[in-house]
Length: 184
Length: 264
Image 1: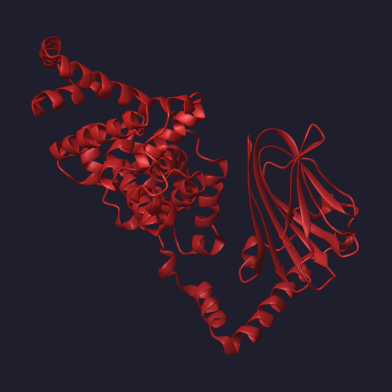
Image 2: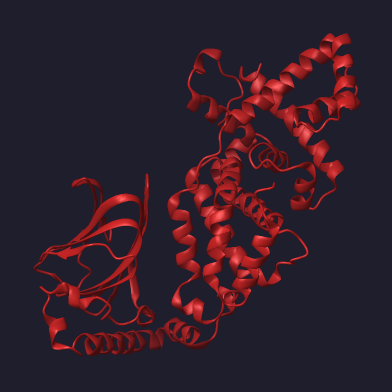
């Protein structure tokens, strides 16, 4: 994640803590895209992703004095985003339905898949069938482009656990997509 | 049956972190094992499918929504890292008063009266400010944004169009309406706020950021926008209830967005 320059983040955080709340805008501009996409892939619905992203930034601002500068800012705010997404999904009836598989059928005919939007919808639906642990590692790896080590930092788990969780999640996703006639 | 070591190697190959030696070992294994080849092809296709979904841009209004929350005057006064739950000072004191039912009405009246008197005093400070036709004279003459603390927010409209984003908020105290219009555009556009001239009269405005051309008729206020700016408009309304206003965004003189606030 070379685009995430830790020093810039540290400077912005310091300015915020010194009373310049406008400096937080630098962090919002820098992280709004990855945080929004993380929430979108975790929750599927753009409106939900928007709400969660807003909450993430406001909570980060409110809790900025509890941020430990020994760690990288991106791992701290990603962790907030993951926790917020998980909390949001717990409150969301819609996602409960997806997780239990009630409303999302795994079986679909190949003829249905001829549009990019349809493919995106299918992939999003397949991801939403994963448990939150699996969903998180898939999103961090494939949509936020984090390394194993960065994922370990964000999730606060050993790198070895990240790998086994990611590989299992990918296997599960492969099964779901193949049952739906995608990704063969 | 494929052993875990080679499944792991397949995954790390897909993630692009295998060494040359590991890649060669995997290639040799796949060469000799048809089941493994099929499995790897499936796994790679899955990864390609996931990766084919592109990231999208965050809505332009996200930045404004966040920044408008964290840079409100009350929070600003207490420092950037003050928790919303732990704010103190006048803001808390006012909130405390409003929280007590027996004092709410009296407090509302007192706050409204005080703000009304402040705004009136500022506007009547110079006689020319009372001539609505010469609107340029109103710029910068309104009460400061801080004086809005304690006003009732009666509408909050988020605008999120392709290339245009921001918000419009309406506040009211007594017969005074305050419209806070903060918009950002990546191309030249106009926005307009229209209202019933029999019920609402523009009384003044203040702009922050880069000002555009500003004009007003008896029933509509318009401003050009190219970049980011914010207008705070002060209206007098005679109906006694919040009078609806219509926000329109024009591009090449055509209406590309329209919304009525507050929603009926």
